[in-house]
Length: 485
Image (tube, rainbow, N blue to C red; front, side, top):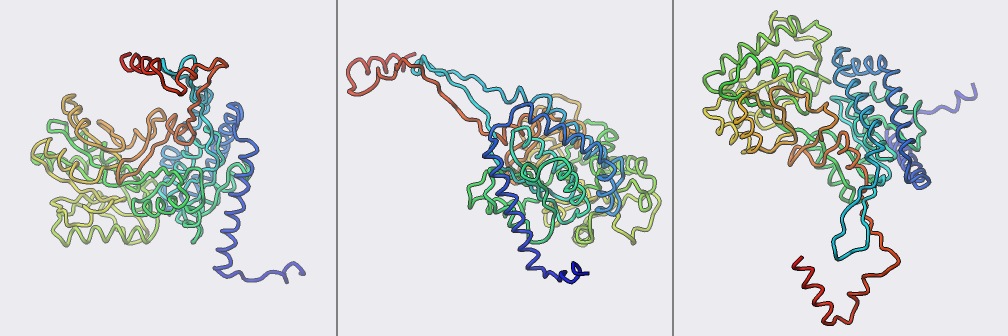
């Protein structure tokens, strides 16, 4: 009873202040802990990675249930394939290679600096901040965490407020696995995002929209914090002139319905040979109907994350229809979608640049199809717009493939499929221009979150004395010889 009498209602401003104080406290603790152990051994890093891997495997059912609850419907298989499996594989890949990555690399010194020796040491940066989005709340938290742990850093993860259940599960999982001054998860309450981004991190990794990425970069600039920005944009899928349409349609359909298009590298629009648009529509409908004969009540058909995103997508659809787009809903059983947050896929034909759907990242089950006359016209269309995070090309002609890859810029590219390149641990992942900056995954993640420190070793014999002042004829002859070498 005495304890109950001490309870009082905490107002939102006071609660927010308490959360920021907690953020500051953990940050200070991690900085102090890093100063006490600034260069963890390879064996220690491997242990940390293994503990993380085992925690994910042990808690996979909790994670699946939490993500399903946050989305209001997401298939277990989709979460296992798109979040847990690539997270575990990424950890395993790093753990097997981190000892090799840590080895100092020998570098040449040139005649002028002999008999010196040069090498590069890879040191941890310190305390790394990770801001995680809602669309893949586990994978996009664990991916940067894996690179940071492999590089020997301390890590704080800020979860999205749109995935509260996943945030609570991951926070509990991390608390059970790591000391707070090593890895900590901050759940996504209002008011913490700006405070988190404004901390003087040794590196900040942000995954999210381009608009929010600009704010994050401004906040980081106050402390000259280096950033990795994984943003999004409008990733095109180009179908080659002679490519079998059925092949392309099936693979594009898969890439569009994974997580119901709520994927930063989902195909955002299709560039299709103008004489084959109707053929593409027919094969796309057939492919999607085979994957999801029923949709509205199908537990494997993912919902839109929240009412705000659901309304935004319907706003894009209404705007396109009002401005003349031909809308083709793919709804095999003509089901009623008026209840809940599930939404059929819609193909959009005859779109124009003044439509919002062609100016904004879609991030949902809407897919514009744009006709082109020649492959060069398709390339020019892509190049006239901000550089995308991914580019998908469907073509079995090597000359066409080489031409498109050489004449377009994108964060990554995939030939004859969609999405899968992101899960290749030996490939760097990152954007370019408005789709982001920096890259991580695998060795690139280790390098991005390490300081490559150049070191020159000179012996006791001081050869540099030969070029000390006063500068006589000997120095001029030496420089002349070195210039001609």
